[in-house]
Image (cartoon, rainbow, N blue to C red; front, side):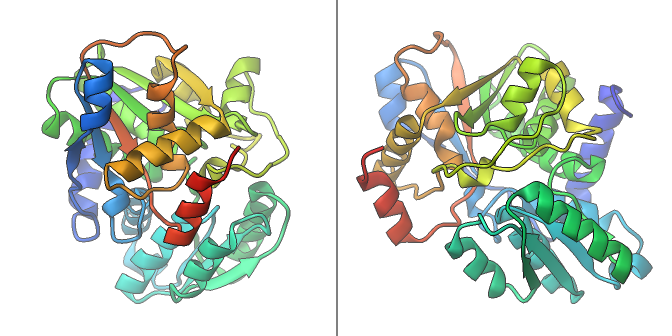
Length: 325
């Protein structure tokens, strides 16, 4: 299935049926401010309204529900910068099976607190997501649980791809889709769903300029390891795995461009979205940040930006948008 886009399209279609009990068909909302400023329609696909507070529930639900029931009852283990862990915990709690979430010591306290309240067992250890991943793999082997990777997994990718299918239905005249980019599960899934039906639609991956591992790896042509550094877009932190099997190649093949934005730009994007009544994480604001940049290439036609999550406190949002970067 590596490069068979029709096979991926079928996998995404199957995922949509499989995850229906867990996933909302989230709305698209018109960005009045940016549409007026830029002169073409801009819409936000609001997947921060999922029950777990982020799009990650799509891939988590599909990965878990793809496995036989006799495996599911043994529980699931994952590693996460926050949102994927919350998604796995939500699905497991709904199904009544145990969940273990491994996070590094760099994950923001607010997300660790939310994970502790989710009913999952939380393991906080390591100085990067890569180290948390090693711990999760070891525990999965020891406990016989299902390991659900946050991005580099066909079932996760297909689950995230259901978001791309919804965009095509809700905004049929879309010409450009802006996708926050980290490990590439969302970006590759969305690109597969869109390119399978409309290859002329542009799909752009957007990351922060502090420790953007996928962006730097694409520049060298091979997966890299990099130190994690603090960023407003903390959900985009983490490595892509030196042994990355799926997302790196899919991103190389399918995305029309990959760009990065500064911390100051992310802050401006969060402010603009807040003015539109949308309280989101910094990772969800990178599309708005890029659209506000005066030095970006020109666009034309309808644009859809994906808002990926809102798992931060109102106090954290106020601090992030009020402070000077």
